[in-house]
Length: 378
Image (cartoon, rainbow, N blue to C red; front, side, top):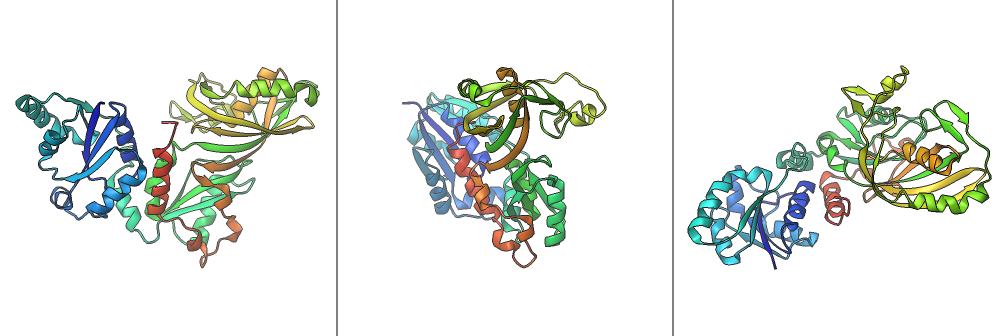
């Protein structure tokens, strides 16, 4: 057994904490978490924690990530080290000031433990102050919107501002105008937390038109006939080819995308007829299911990592089939555990009813934590 010890306040748990715990688990197979007592938090941070130490212990236990969770005096963590005798003490990126003291203690106590320093995770977002502000903002929250076709993501935000009368509104995960489905919008101080959704996996349903090609890889571009084909004869080949895309891989972002290279959005260059070299990005496709094929149109469901371009996937499927293919329809059905079935149409929202659809920041963060805690994609 290799025992790892980590320490912290662990108030208002967020994905940064989950990442801290998951990184620590890589150094051993038995994890002990030492949680600061309330008096330590008041002394070090100048305010009482949002949750008392018993609740913070309870919240950590619900994640089911640690083997032992205890509270203790962080002014004297060495007492716990003597008692627990860990093989590794792992420090977060904001705990580096403890290194010299730990080294002196280790050398003088004749205890033989390693000191590991962990990498930060979205440290610009995972800040206790920002999260507490969002939780305490009575107007803040998240709306799950079922975006209609032809609307841009910015159009949705503008419409929400006019309905609710609040200017501070943003969104996560842009959807192209021709795409439909789940768009998560943030209100008030919750806008400071939208980056926490970035790494969640996405699920899409797509219709891919076979036998045609497009300069944008979707139906909004210049369409050219590629080849004539019979869908039935391709069925077995399609299953084999789709399975070949499952797993980790590198994917080249399309020129018609919002990805920035050298400070310029690729689609801005593409519209000028300029094509530049792009670096493939690391993505993962967890699952592809065929939903049917009819009249040369293949319908699929894709569960994938953030940063995956379904347009590129459609084009790549067409290239492997030798038929060409264009993404014809796209609907996002899930972002992590947030589902399209829970989303609301914009035309259903009014000033006097939108709060009934609002997911408060604390509830949203708890849902995020559950996703990150059991994630296979980190």
